[in-house]
Amino acid sequence: MENTKRYIGVFDSGIGGLTVVKSIVETMPDENILYFGDTAHVPYGTRSREQITEYVLNDVRFLSRFDLKAIVIACNTADAIAKDKVKELYPMPVFGVVDPASRKAADSTKNGKIGVIATNATVNSRAYNKEIAKYNADAEVLSVACPLLVPLVENGRFRKDDIVINTVLHEYLAPLREAGVDTLVLGCTHYPLLYDVISSMMPDVNIISSSVAAAEALRNGLEELGIFGEGACGERKYYVSDNAEYFEKTALVFMGDNLGGSVSHVEID
Amino acid sequence: MENTKRYIGVFDSGIGGLTVVKSIVETMPDENILYFGDTAHVPYGTRSREQITEYVLNDVRFLSRFDLKAIVIACNTADAIAKDKVKELYPMPVFGVVDPASRKAADSTKNGKIGVIATNATVNSRAYNKEIAKYNADAEVLSVACPLLVPLVENGRFRKDDIVINTVLHEYLAPLREAGVDTLVLGCTHYPLLYDVISSMMPDVNIISSSVAAAEALRNGLEELGIFGEGACGERKYYVSDNAEYFEKTALVFMGDNLGGSVSHVEID
Image (cartoon, rainbow over all chains, first blue to last red; front, side, top):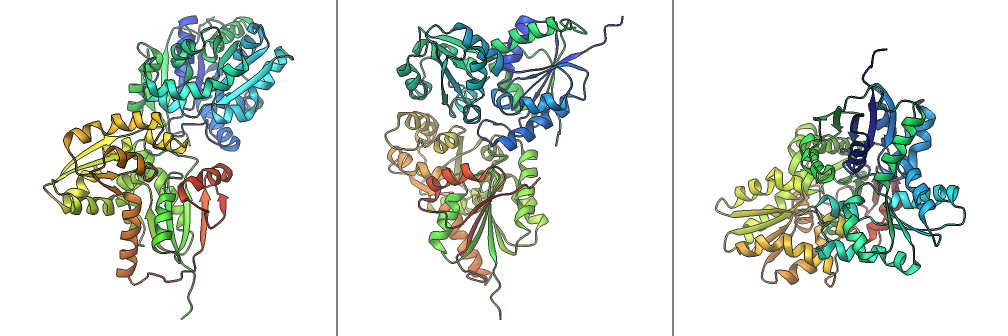
């Protein structure tokens, strides 16, 4: 049988989903990845449900032009709001970030108190509350919307000694510290870059990255479906709906080393 | 002659243009204002020239459905990038923010050193450098891109005692203080909310709000064209491309008191 090239289609509102790509590459370096970042409409996290759904369906429509074996919604906001709609409209396996992170949090909490930090839209959707309840009906979930974290991270303010990120995070995390959560979900794909700052503020708390959890769940899912490694040759391609140059520059902050593939601009409206 | 109702069409990428509306209302309370905030595509300041131009032309197309006597581009980014295109395509008088603020800065500097703070896109466009040179060929213009100020202002972090806005502004303003500018243009319609913090950091500097300058220039322009007060009855209407509710909530921070009119959602794509 010929090993036709097949892709995992990963999308995000912009650049944050690259932390998911990074985790996928670490877990499954041979899988081909097509990434779409909707940089013409970023950010999703402050927009309405209707608007987010419209943008997500455009993103998936673009990716579905390629031979995909799976779709990964690498944006907590998009996943929280529009995953059901994507599953309804597309026959291929759809993976997200909210479900894997919820499962890990539900499994790992000892005192039943789980904190979630995320965008406004993700918090308002109550997606984490619903998913965590599926795995641990007794868990108490406290969510805090953190609208400033995405712009701060994108502007490089995620270092431990930066008073700006420290002050802002200190305020956002205060209710979670007071409530005594023993587990904290980083419910936005930008937040893994804040891991060091957050863990220094909450040293005894189990911090769960939705990006890492998503890559683990994807690998398990592909194996279960018998398509792990199928058509894989380690190819990576990136598409963005606004200028490719700015994306490329910021992308390295998220990917750690090189992107491993070209970035192209594409009109999707 | 019947006094048919006519409007001043004001638009912005989102909510910042309300500081221009506020200044217009203070200067010309009787003029009818139609405001459009492109909240489905906000922010413009981090996007490419091509993308910004496309969004601006959609904004103007929407406003041009009404009987307008003038258009006001109440967004420095949109004005810096796409004003010429709007003037080329629409026959009505088009007013902006960059030209009036440039003129005021050029006229008021004593030492010929003018600072400009603005979004990435406005700074990259060099629109302020070009406009200021028209009025004062010898002036030295130093521009600093301040990508974090819009999200900080929108999240209410513009108080004098807030260490976050103080730290971020301190860094952004450092090169301007070192250069010894005697005049500073607030080249983004969000920045008037930072007037107090900035003036406490640069007490001897003449601070020019592009929003106030725009309203003054609009009034002069309408008087010169003989259409000041024409068809005016103090009506105000607001339209936004995403959810009206969030806009309404944040809007009061910018307008000071009430909006003086209803907010409606409209699809413009």
